[in-house]
View 1 (tube, rainbow, N blue to C red):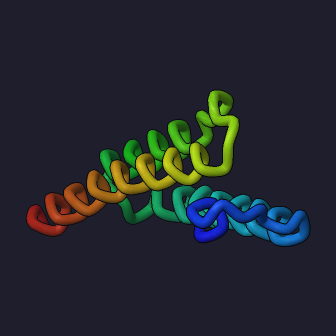
View 2 (spheres, rainbow, N blue to C red):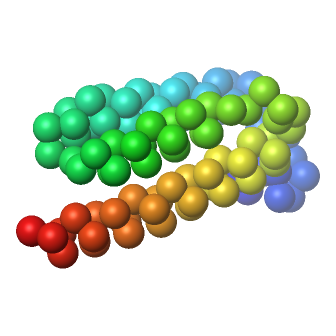
Length: 93
């Protein structure tokens, strides 16, 4: 993100590393979702599924900055929904 904002290119090796880390993070979310089905509410599971679907909808993205903006917007949207659901769920217990 820093490189994009200052107009520098990310080295190919670093770009590959960042893509690998992003993939690992998505896999961790998927694993957490699978395990979470035992402890998370139905609505929390729906939020995670919607996040996964929308975050993966990147066919229209052509630049790194667009990717960063898309990722931030989607993550922020679903994180806020997840927090609200967690509060609601905890309030019912």
